[in-house]
Amino acid sequence: MTLRRKKVAIIGGGITGLTAAFYMQKMADEHNLPLDIILIESSLRLGGKIQTLRRDGFIIERGPESFIDHSNSVRNLARDLNIEDQMVCNNEGKTFVAVGNELYPIPTNFMFGGPLEVSTFITSGIISLAGKLRAAGDILLPKSTEDDEPIGDFFRRRFGKEVVENLVEPLLAGTFAGDIDHLSLQSMFPQFSQLEKKHRSLILGMRKAKPTISNQMVGSYQSFHNGLETLIETLEKKLESKNVLKGVKVEKIEKEEEKLKIILNNMSPIKCDSVILTTPFNVAKDILSEVHLMNEMPNMNYATIATVTMAFKKDQQKTDKHNAMTFFVSRNSDYAITTCTWCNHKWNNVVPEGYDLFRVYIGRVGDEAIVELSDTAIENTVLNDLRKSIGIEGSPEFTVVSRWKEAMPQYTVGHDERMQQVKNSLYEQFPNIHLVGSSYEGISIPDCVFQGKNVALEMLENMFEKQVQ
Image (cartoon, rainbow, N blue to C red):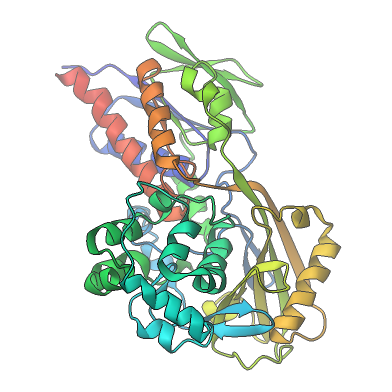
């Protein structure tokens, strides 16, 4: 039986779209499927927020800096691209939290929201005696009947205000740039909700599930020897002979008989059989204006942030935290930064001999205005914070400021349910359009790679199995 030729458009050239395009083409080639793929990206480069700056022996990540790959989705992709040997893991080092004017080590066995051992709290200097007693109360408290709730409410209920302010909030704000009193527990940390429902006490539940929960929450940070953009560059080379459009904006998708018609801003419409839409949710809403529920859904909130990277000559810091890798910042501290990483402590190959490289985040939900300051003002603000926190002296050799406006989707309470409603409504009207990407089922690089691969395989199966049946 001769299979009818199909055409798929992938809208968005970030890591999700690139992964989908790669696996779709790979499977089509391996199984000799008659398939045409077109990738459409509104900007002039591929890769989205993954951007590596290489200069004078320094490797600087302007966007995300690393990933933790519990699912092995990135490693599997790297293997399929023949670049697995270029992957690197971080060095060992301690993580701290800045509370007031002090840096406190994050307790051993504390993972984002919860301790694996009661001794985690007992031995920590970051929590007062009263705070420790309140946290231990988790063992006695009843479980909640809520299906979803804010992360902040959940951990305050289990461990008390002090643990949340000094540990949970700094870690999550530094990682997701969000407001824990609005972020969804079910969407971001469902394992904690499941532990409470099953074991009542989070501490007891984490002890019983220690091997499993450790695998889910703990892992080495990973990157590539020449930076994360190695992944993007390799994917782009694999797609060079395919149809990739850059600097082309999708304005709308319409039905035309059995086809989908993609309206573009600067060229003739494109007709195709199926679409993978990987843009941010608010962009997807505009493109899918004909889908009824999309118009009714409120816009998704996104955090605006900036990364600031500074290079110093060695020995310009007075801190005694020479084994430090990262510190997060409590809102109870007088700092503008939310996170700081000693890049050359974390990675072996990111600086030339004789230099230190620091990378910080500024900006989060409720504190976006700082990102709008001039580069000079941002540099002075960050430098002041580094002087207070780790005793930096002198001026940086150079500073790189990278602004990311509306960059990090905020999965607020009810996110999973809302997105499922959107996808159900979309399927009823446009069954051949699929929504994937950081706005939906995880914002990390591994989450996006996982979504991109899955949607590619599912779409191929659906398209060509129907012809064979």
